[in-house]
Length: 404
Image 1 (cartoon, rainbow, N blue to C red):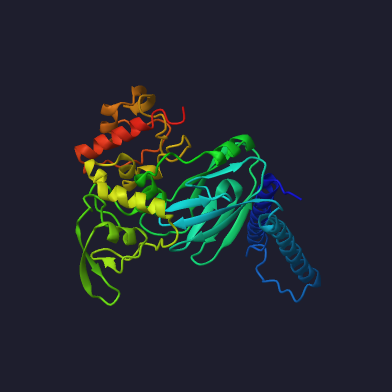
Image 2: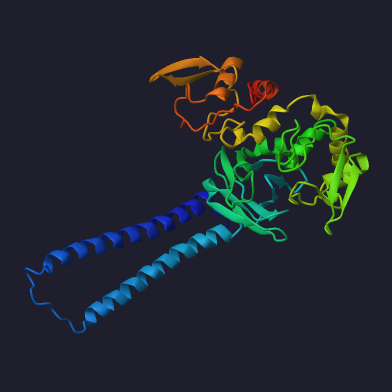
């Protein structure tokens, strides 16, 4: 029998409310008893201390009542646990792979995506694993929080009952860009899901998009900026010093043969000056995709100028601003450029046009005219070069009509 997701969510919430409510009630009763005893047994009223020797009724009460309370908590907790772990028959299985610092979802037909798209009204079973360190799959809307462990497959399930977009976070601190490890569950109608699943991949293979898909751009910049790994800018023909596990150093040239191994994480050593954080992708990347990624790195396209999307991710912008219209800490980037927004200036609301001048002003001093309705948390970015600022402006422009 299929258990609707509302029943699972309600079951978990009911257990939480019962335990919290019981604890709060006990706290109030203890506090009231304490105040009563302080008043009743004040020294003025009882100058001689009273002595009590055994009370069978009291002993029965404080033994029976806690036992009943604990058993009730267990019953509520067990019902929630069985609802969360009892996957309905016929649930669609989706493989979830976590890596620093991205999520990958693979469907039964082999299709992969960076966000979890699911049909409304159908149960979905998630098979969760990790390629590097322990991450945590946390979807608050469906009360799911499950660790993803390297070399182990855990599972969870849920069933959306209405269309909507729900956040997915990483609940386990996993490194420098842990806060950027965000994606979404997008619940759509069964017809829309079938159409999405049947979509053919775009003609040709986009090497840059593939680097993003496999999480490479979370550690390697395209514009020469320092990051967790060596920059991809001007990588073609670059001399690279590798440190082998035994400590011996060797110099290699970044040519096609080297990059094919390096992209898979099998280059025979660690680039000098960097930590050995890169996961091994051997056997995980199809050969056509691998060749497309290497071709992209060898063409020199990454050196043409800063990449706005990668820059936004590197600077942490996408940790506070979504690109799909969903609400985060700051206003979404989707449709932002070219529209109007309300700012607060000298205590008064003011409508402003989000154009290039406004974006550059915000990057220089975001607290000068904070956006109404959001906490003034954004830092200034005085160290961005003019080229990088223009790249961010162009990126916002590209998202101006996203989804329209």
